Image (cartoon, rainbow, N blue to C red; front, side, top):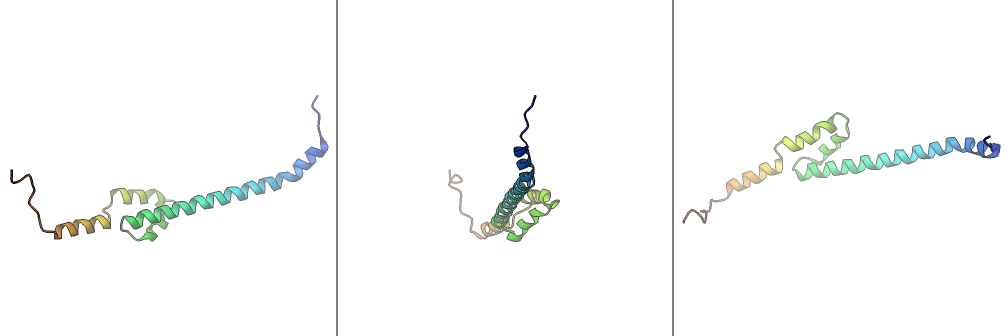
Length: 100
């Protein structure tokens, strides 16, 4: 035989919606924090690669969040293009091994 406690059951029924609402609010706040952190990281990565930082915000759009890492991985970064141009402007020094 299972003992029932009507007062406890009534209290749980009264608290049920409030607890669920509190869990929902906490989950929404945590997901908002994760989205903000993710956006900041993407913006920082894009700016360090030489792109405009706002391209990192495109990672928040559902289909583009799959495409943007491929742009970073396989695209030619503007910062690397600028480094190559600057290296091309430097005078060539003879290699120390070429005189041997």
